[in-house]
Length: 272
Image (cartoon, rainbow, N blue to C red; front, side):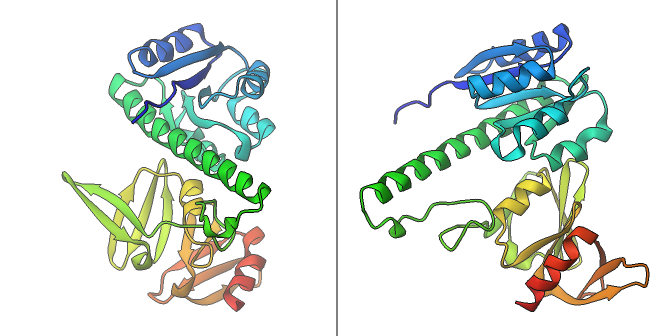
């Protein structure tokens, strides 16, 4: 099989030492090309748009324009695969809400960097494969072929041809178990992790809520809050308070807060 082209990586950090640290670790990896080392957010936006890297290591705390503002400026849907680098763990949830694949807390060791990098590399390759399939589909449509026979994995809500997660791998004590998504009652965010709740069992995986939401069938799962996803057929009732707040009650009695911005859509989905 032909080898993949080099993974094109952009490093963004306002501290020269931080840029050199990431660059030094990347140079130990095979198949990596460092396309730029940027020291501020404004230049990072320009570099991302002009260089189109596959992967960005993006510092969160930068003067002028933070890493989070860089993502908002580009748009989460248009960002390359992103690993945030931060000195403060409190930024993790905000980073994951902006679709970061992972984050590194300074100072990080070589092993933690390797874990984040390999995860980001896998995600970047998956996105590359998805783009190639999209291009093929466009070519088939343009030449009048019956493209409806080509089923392309897409993000949640993208249509009937989409494929979604059916099982989620969970590693524990040297074993990898595969949890059917149909068994999941709900999912809770737990820092950089997600907690899959299956009956009276809980399984912790290192995955962003945004990534899970994108990969789960929207006909079956709904994100009721930034920190919670529920399986719709587990919903028993909506509990409305005089204050306007609302909880979703599952069949097992668990109550989960619903964000006000999500309540109307949830009611529509349940009615369907």
